[in-house]
Length: 407
Image 1 (cartoon, one colour):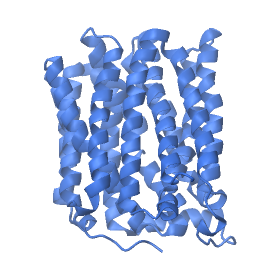
Image 2 (cartoon, rainbow, N blue to C red):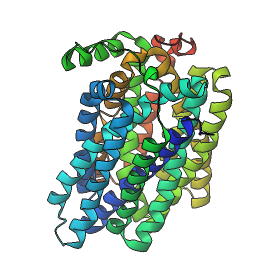
Image 3 (cartoon, rainbow, N blue to C red):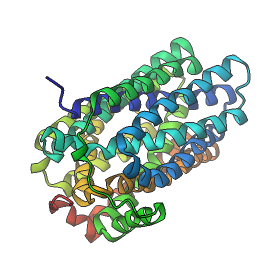
């Protein structure tokens, strides 16, 4: 008896996202420990994420044309080779910051279509497995959070044990396994593919995806808000948290402990959302989830609370944040036409990540000029203002209205 297709997709997501989380800690830590510069650490994040955003936006029509499954397999396979360049160049003594920048740019270009393709397969596996959409988005949300926990915990231990460059070998292995799981575990019938007009041009398909996003007030409001919160999350994850850990005299394992505490608790939140998400008031849960996801964790670090208090806040915050991705995913797939899922999901993801390349630079400059406590406090305050948008902007209220499945 074959497994429901959502299981291989969830497993592939865990593997690739956990590997990505590992590299998101290992590469900035490598730069921070070798250069001592928060600004250069942020620059590496910029060099990876800007190509990521562009590749994700432009790759959407290709996902609809070629197929999400094929794109995921090829992107994960090529990402393996790109990741391997970092330890190989390090061992060869050639890994200066100026060599690392184009390598991480290549990693970003290859990661983007893989992430978008896996997300685009959600409606397909829901249909194949005859599962409610919110059940599948909840499972995928829990998988994403589980991946974050595994990746963060593994990163701290592996970096401390092996060093940041050798630890990336595990990242490469994760991408190989992800490609194999998608290739062997998800085999949709030919009839599962939505009909597509093959006479249209790439430009026309890209423009059609843009129009869907532009004309839907809920999707438009979501993408603007998430872009802002992602800017602050990126600053926190790749610069502010590592700098705080180093300033406090702690070793790199604490970066993994803090991130794993948050992600681990979020698994429970996402699992509950998968079971009862369809009965929850979306707007209320969405607003509370973002309040706990960003402002509260950053504020507790800015206040320099004792370590047990910090871990406790991260556990509570992670649980609340776990409800976010299942809600957002269900809204997206309800509102996007089935034949355009690839391009609209990719474009939505790219726009939601559009400010992330600047997050590391923002965090590095703020920490460099004003100190880590002020940088964290300022970012927490700006994040808090952003989380108030759903209460002030009328279009957000429409997210509680379940749209009919898109044709």
